[in-house]
Image (tube, rainbow, N blue to C red; front, side):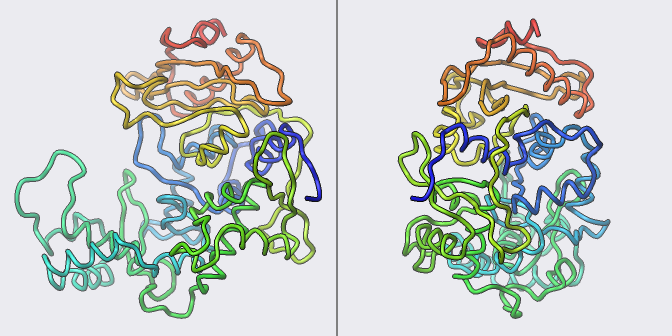
Length: 432
């Protein structure tokens, strides 16, 4: 070990790498800011939950403030043909969009073996022989297309279920997307569209190899290195989680390597150094300056003081890895969307509230678009304290949170913030 950091230094360093350590810029966000975030994090998670705002909108709002979501859509999904020159969609950290320069690093994931792939392929070949080839040819000839536009290739048989319904065509398109046989994007209302990889990426399909993919070992190391640059500081498990890399050596996707080997390589090449952090049971890697580092690599920096404030989506990189959230910020968090209502503790869609370098609360939010209201269905104060942080008074937290909620309501085009009297922070929030 060559250095030691306090818990507060580690928190500030992490938040600085995440773009959350300082107050938001006062100027209006623009496309260059969207791309800068994508380059720094390497991944923007997607999710269909829309109770407040879609998952990919929130991280940029948390860091940049109010912006035109249509401008972000144009940046991510491109022109009317659904092609963006800046990003591509695949399985980075769950369903995600990633900067184009990471496409070669995803080739191994498209080609890798997985039980879901083999089961899906076997079922489709058994139940609808030749459908995969038909769907692939139709996408190549007619794309971009939606699943609905190709349903005639294998009309659905039997009654449709009320939820999570699927068809053979949808399964075929998903299989081709995951394996790199077709490219995916988004159309109106977040509907997934499919097109040939030649039109969307300017590359041959992954299963034709085409010479554009990185070898698995090189791809794994690159993704680990990008995760290091994105978070600034973290344990090996923290860094592996950023792109959902396996920690354990010998895991199928690891190709015989694993987190410790990738960490050792990053240190050997001067991209990181080992440090100890107050209260952490495992050693951490700290991103360091390196003369030969690639353009996307950024050395970690401690700003000395964290002055930002932000509501964070459950799909924000800060919240992804729950052990880190608990270790760094003392927040024991889980999303309760799939928890039966009587068993929910905090609420259906709770967002952590970051103030300075502390998670000081969480709020259950819903956008009532018809009534034009941002509904605060519950507001809770975080009771845990973390090393090196002063406890903020409830009224201070209430004022800061009220400001963030009003900013969010304006961004979402809502004219009122309606606060319910549920939760131990609700009185201070209502007073603020």
